Length: 504
Ligand SMILES: NC(=O)C1=CN([C@@H]2O[C@H](COP(=O)(O)OP(=O)(O)OC[C@H]3O[C@@H](n4cnc5c(N)ncnc54)[C@H](O)[C@@H]3O)[C@@H](O)[C@H]2O)[C@@H](O)CC1
Ligand SMILES: [K+]
Image (cartoon, rainbow, N blue to C red; front, side, top):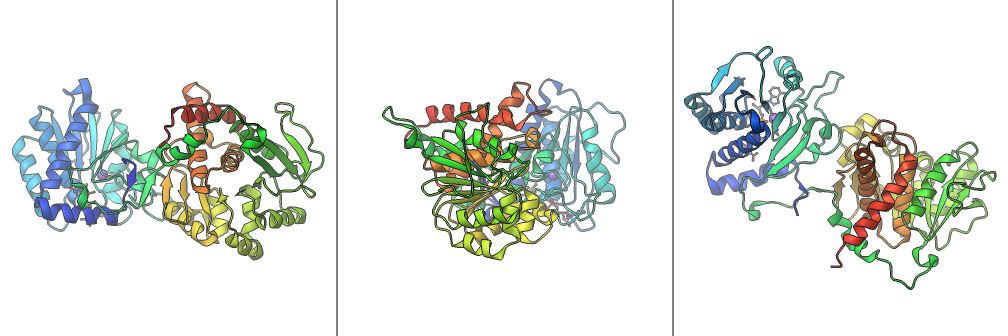
C-alpha cells in the first residue's frame, strides 16, 4: 500500500536501520538524485533558466547541496544560498558541500533581485526543525514563492511540523515555506496532509530512497483511500430481489424551531447515499415536508421509535432540555449512531451523557469540527489544531467511538487496531454552511446499509470530499459551492465506486 504515513520518530528509526546497512551518506546521495530528477521534471522546457537552491545548516541543507551538484552536472545553472549553522555540518553534508563546490554550482550571499528562475528548491530545514523560523530564515521562507516559478520543498516545507502539519511556533507571525511541490524521503508524513500541511506542501511525491522493506517500522497512520473501504463497496452491490426495507432506515434527530435546514440537508444526503427510508424526527412539530424530496418522512421527535434504525443526531438540534432528553434516549439505544453539531455541544457539557456514550456497544461516529472537538476535550481549538491527529486519537479513546475531526485533511480515528487515517479529498469549497450536515447524513446512510463505523466514516469523508472536487472541476465552486449540491455528486461517486469495486 502506498498510503502509509510515518512519524518523525519512525522515519528516524528507519533511517538508522537503513544507514547502518548502506553506509553513511548513501541516503543523502539518493535523496539528492531523486530531488534532481523531480526538479528536472518540474523545469520541463525551462532547463535554460537557473534554479535557486536554499540550503540550511542540517542534513536537509545537505540534500539541497547534493541536488544542486546533480542539476549542475545535468547542465542546469544552479544558484545556491547556503546558510551554515554555528555547529559544524555532519560529515555527509560536508561531503555534499565539497561536491557542490567542485561541480561548478554558483554560491550566492543573498536572494537575487528580479531574477527569472525556473525553479526554487527549499532545503532550509526538514524533520530536524526544532523551533519557529525567525530572522533571516523567516524572511527567506516568505520570499521563496515570489519568483513566479514552482517551489520544490525537500522532505518537508521549512517551518512546517512533519508530524502535525502545524506551522511551528506560538505567535501570529509563524512562518513556513509555501511550496507547489514536496518530495518527501523514506516515507510520507502526516503533517504534509492535514492542518496547514496541504497549503504549504502542494503536490507530494514520496521517494523511499530504495530502502528495503524490512527496515521499515509499522506506519503511524494512513492516507484515506478507496482501498480502505473497498470491502464494503463490494458488498453494496444491489441484488435484484430487494425492497426498501433491505437498505435500512436513517432518522435525523434535530430541527429545533428556526433550524429546519440542517436536518433536511442531512436527510437528503442520507437518501441519495442509499438509505432505504429516511425520517426527520424534528423537535419543531411545524417541520412537515420537503418539496425537493417528498420521499423524506417527517415525524415528531419525542414520540418517535428509534429501535432498529440508524440515528443521526445533532443537525439543528439546539440546546433545549427536550433536545438533551432525546439525546440521552438515542445514546442509550442500540441503534448505530452519528453525533454531530449541537449534539456534540450538548455532550461536551454533560458528564452523564459522556458516561452513557462511553458504554455504548453499537457503532458510534462523532463528527466534530475543531471547535466542537476542543469543547469535548476541554481545551481551545488552537490546541486541537496544533495536533489534529493526537486530538482525534484522544477523543476516540475517551468515547470508544470513531472520530471524524473535520477540517483541511480530515482525521478519522478509531479506538482500535485500524488507527488513524487522514483524508486527501476535498477543497475549500466545503468551508460553507451545511456541508457538515451532509457528511453526517452520508455517514448515517452507510451505517444503515451495514458498513462498520470505521468504514462508514472513511467512505463518507472520502466521497464527501471527492464530490466537492468533482463540483469544482465542473466550475461549481470552490467559491459559492453550496451544501445542497453535494448529495447528488456523492450519489454519482458512490455508484461509480460500487460498480468498480471487486469482491475480495
Ligand atoms: N532522516 C533521514 O533518513 C534522511 C534525512 N535526510 C535529510 O535530512 C533531514 C534531517 O536532517 P537534520 O536532522 O540534520 O535536520 P534539519 O536539516 O531539518 O535541521 C536541523 C538543523 O537545523 C537547526 N535548526 C532547527 N530548527 C531551527 C530553526 N527554527 N532555526 C534555526 N536553526 C534550526 C538544528 O539546530 C540543526 O542544526 C531530513 O529532513 C532530510 O531532508 C536525507 O539526507 C536522507 C535521509
Ligand atoms: K525543506
